[in-house]
Length: 88
Image (cartoon, rainbow, N blue to C red; front, side, top):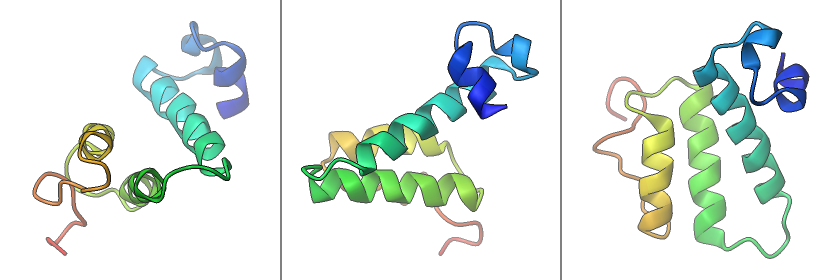
């Protein structure tokens, strides 16, 4: 589905995806491209890596909103809003 969404980002329903699923797929692709940059600041790398963990492990809170907050704070992940289930 992700290849289809990348090909048709404005019509994710053609791929059987909702708009939200398409946004998540496209954001994940952007995150992978960012992580591949050799000059990426360490704080941004940490935000992206924490976002990926948040999504993969289904943390509480909005991983995307917390990622944006982390970017704004130059690397400080808002653990009061997004964290592993169980509070860790």
